[in-house]
Length: 212
Length: 234
Image (tube, rainbow over the protein chains, first blue to last red):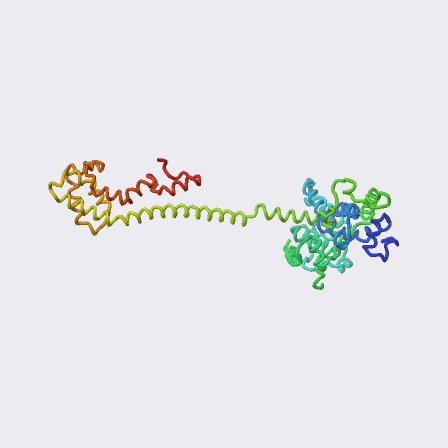
């Protein structure tokens, strides 16, 4: 996916080249980080608005790159921008009226979920499977519908977490950042990040084990 | 999961964008990149004066998300925090009660000072009362009303040690005419009450006390300076 111009080059090299007007370096940098930033945005705002949030993050990265001086890692900097874009998207979404879905009342996400389940050969009215296990690629390999259900369970659980817990957890799980990087990204003490992630996991586990 | 690597796989596989979404996103970003290229160099949005500027020059690597989170945190901490409101209310209450107690203790100190002065004057008052009673025992000691103020002074002494003499004086004061005679009618310039006035204290203190609240003059002045009108204007 990364063009040959970016292969084997560090983020710092690509940044410097992009700042100097190297279009290929800029594109390589964006492609290298896009999917991870998209995953972070999806974790924060949910999949229905993730595309918009990720696009806003990409544009913001380009807009701010001229002032990026490399004091922090590009990964940390870009994740901060992605979180900001996702939070902005959340704010915009709160201001938007949510269309009522007569089938399940879940709006855009409800429509999307039903479409995905229909493609997978299930309906949303079927009973939920055992949710105490961690969703894994094994279940997706065995049953695509199960994978869809698992993913939506995770999305629901994430959406139920407060932002203060959700953002660090998403940065850890989807962004793949270390505690120190998350702390730097969110401008929080490392201990706070650790405790928030732990509490987020506890809440997530409780949410998923609740009877439905 | 290592100590520094918090990834646990709890959320499963990370969501991935569609190819279409990815391409659209990167195309939009590259279009912005082309706009920002000036003379072969990338310029920032702030340099071009666009809205939604990127991080400032001072903190070029502090984009808005953290600011947003910190702003929310500060706002949440400052507003609608019942613990803070309770603490503020308790503090105000303690300060208010403390101030009240201070004012009251200042007032009672003034009163106790006056009482102490009165107590110091008591022996003299006793002597005066005794003298007055002795005078009253003398049938021709002058006009009967002359002893009345002395008896009044003796009553004011509240000294049990002088009860006999005081009782005598009271008997005298109970006589018709003696009760009716006003204290100011004392014609005798050598009357013991004059001695009391010289020694000064109960009468003088009474003159210095606020007539309604019984507060000393100095306290009334202090309260006036503080803007508290707790003393009755004379």
